[in-house]
Image (tube, rainbow, N blue to C red; front, side, top):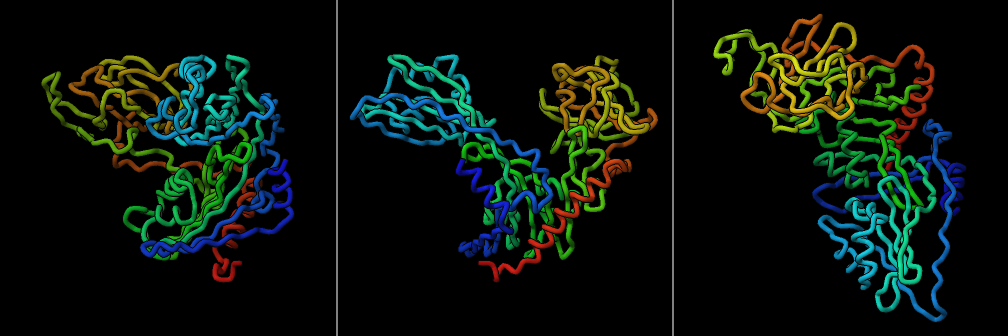
Amino acid sequence: MLTQNMLNQDRKKKLRWFITVSTMPLLGVVTAFGLVPTSNLGLDTGKLSIEQLALPAATPVATGAASFWHTERLQRGDTVADLMQRLNIKDTVASSYLRKSNETSAFRKLSVGSEVQAETDASGALLSLSYLDDQGAKTVISKHGATFNSKAVAVQLEKRLFVRTGVIKSTLYAATDAAGMPEAAANQLTQIFSSDVDFQNDLKPGDRFTAVYETTYSNGALIKIGQIQAAEFINHGHAYRAVRFQTNDNHSDYYTPEGKSLKQAFLRSPIPFSRISSGFSMSRFQPILKLWRAHKGVDFAAAIGTPAKATADGVVAFKGVESGYGNVVILQHQGNLSTVYGHLSRFPAGMHKGEHVRQGDVVGFVGMTGLSTGPHLHYEFRVNGQQHDPMSVALPNALPVSSANKVAFKALSNKFIASLVQLRNTNLAKLD
């Protein structure tokens, strides 16, 4: 395969650089980027997914008959008819098949931006149509006589590492756009360093970023932007670095080069960007019971059905109905810590007592069950069973890299950090 040969050649070469200089006067961003051999960055090449491409048999075309290929991407709001028109398909049988057949249900669920290729004859009759789904699986729809059928085709999946680096002149996203860094990777960059860098208010012209991220391609087409593997952000002259490390249980997190976790052990709120409708208080009037009593939790106002997320890794200790809480979930966390999620409208399907959950997993949906006068989530943070104000209590640090994984982590970290430093210190003016 052409793609495979190119990869083999890349691995034999040193880091190959490309340079772009933005001509947009408002940004003034100089960026450099390149495709980095995995061996240079410590990625376990044994995990690369390479499959042989099995090409479908060509559809017989009458001698002398002309056929035409068209390629389009699905746009927001597109119907099957809209896409067929842009693909120059004028075929009522094909239209009915694409709109109604069970075999083409995946086609009707393609996400915005998905690429579709179609082959038609001179009159616009559909001869074949192919597309890739969100997982990179290829489907080919072919005409056989007066009917159509669909079949899955084996595809080649390959994972590549890309490096993007840039200097900020205005905003982070202006710089990442100029560097050609996908929005999904840029969002990850802000999440990784959000506890150290205030990306809204504290960026300074001259701040720099470098990120190594993974992508998945299928037959040359980009399918997925994967995880950032290593990154550096220099803010006000101070360098913050992160390395992604996956443990034996297939769980991954970001750590400093020394092995300290960058993840917050507990999130302050189980519903991001929600308004606090009632805070922690030792004396609050309860409108249903018509009396003054302690309110040992925080109420987050949200619409019914809003997902409530676990604020930390834990185990489901209780799921059910409990007096004034209504539908409630209690999670047990490390040591003597637990959290409570009350007044839920419903629980996630299949969630059960004893189940392990990760930080950010949905543990319920906002409702107004129990002693509640309106939709909201009642959230509690408990230490040894005693409630503490979750907005002010000192939260524990996330666990560092374990002793059993320190050697493996250090080897990976050293390679990534050396590459980040090399990229950061490269004199862009000398690149050619």
